[in-house]
Image 1 (cartoon, rainbow, N blue to C red):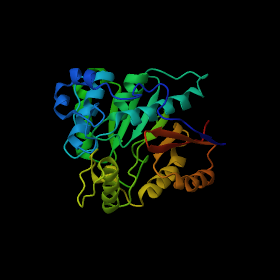
Image 2: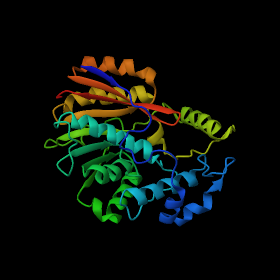
Image 3: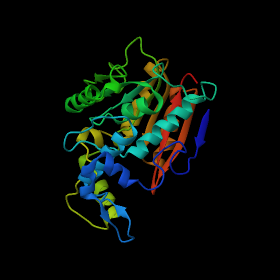
Image 4: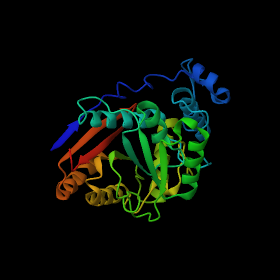
Length: 303
């Protein structure tokens, strides 16, 4: 069964609607005040092309809204935009509610697999706070995994709710990290979208031009990101294609497989691959934040 669902703007449950309350965020993280300025409309704002400003903003959001006492990431690692990441989880929660009498399953009985948990640990942070879910996070980068472990240790509310597994083979997604006794209500994944470092740089140039109206030969990524977070062999097509192929082997251990898709033009290819894989259901969930559009591709062999 195919289904396409459209969302308008942020999910209705997402608390990050409208402009940020910068005064409240400064009270939570006083150092944020150092990078706030008044824009041409007389409103307080940030330079969203500045990676330092982006990191401080997201740190303040996490400390204020998601019950953290500490959060940090190593220099150069991906600093995710919190509203968009929260949106992904809200849509996954709606997907799970379909299988639980239209009620979102809450608490530690719901296990979620986070493929590529990252140094930022963002989905487990949000998901444990919003829904009380438990998480298993996988990662191919030792430094990222070490920082994620440090974040768990520094925030007592996450102890016992999040576990981490190292993926030794960068070309494998489920193999060796999904164990025989595992069952996950859903897996989530924010994959590397680009096929090379050069394509990632070009994408950053476009982003900076859109934000500031400037061009630059050597762009600084405003959200950061290591090679493993930004690009992979075959890009989005290659990664998600492998994910679909490998999902067949663990089809009875995951209720819903989900992944973010950057390019809408790739959807028809993925949907064809899912039909070949013999899935029972597949869905496309549209998402939007400001001018940015993305979508979640979801499939199940069970539902």
